[in-house]
Image (cartoon, rainbow, N blue to C red):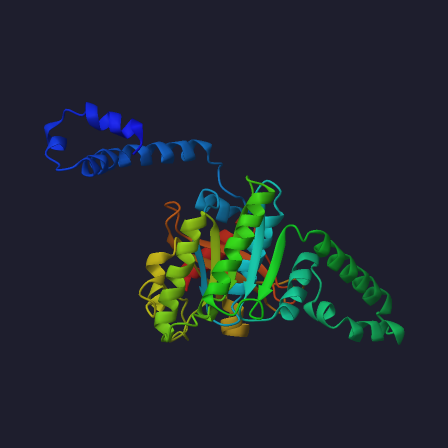
Length: 358
């Protein structure tokens, strides 16, 4: 037994401790009585040494509303084709490409394979059409056949090549894994731990940020779970990893079809008993153009008044344990590039007023 503890026990004169029947119990009593003080010391030291939180320059109101991005479970919930994956990936990119953050990103695409994800990443970064990234041969044929727009297309293909090379050079910032790499919850947990240990070995001050698309696609191979049980189990699973490693974990969550022409609310998460409880932050993602087409009220235009409506993504802060902030964040969204960026303040105020009028 530790001589320091033995000495402490021998010098203890408190009658309440003497009532304990043996030395081992006295050790437990002394340890228990110091647990709170030790925890407070650890917390206070961590709090003073902690930075302001990670920042997302392209999404400043998210940084402000969270008082800096910190470890926790972040859920992006929305209907199909409303942009929840796109906004999560844009935020992941913003986090890892900010040199002040010292973060390595891991994108687990459990819904699509890498060959579908990579074109969207390049398109997002370079503001190029996804089709040009994924099917360059079609566009090269137009150049070879001297299409009227051949010069412009050739320039776009050059930008495509530059974008791919740039992404290769920045492989130390992010990696992408899909369902061929991750076949079970055990694979996912092991992968996150291995990459975390690798990053920490390379730079103790660096950390990782994890994005999982999507929550329901985590395969718990040793459990026979219903859809609701799968969401509950996956929520607890991701939260445990976030707490254990002290990292940011983000995930998308597909909402069931909404009744009526309305925006999603927390009641639409009721299929899961634990998701609302486990998540530190929940963003309800809504795309009025995707939902209502020409009748949409929240949109932008890139050209004349008769040009097509361009979607604006609404992020409703349904839950925020990081601070007291609640509200909506609006982001311009270009689906052809899978690119999102936070709206200017004037537009955000206008969109917010429109939402409350609806």
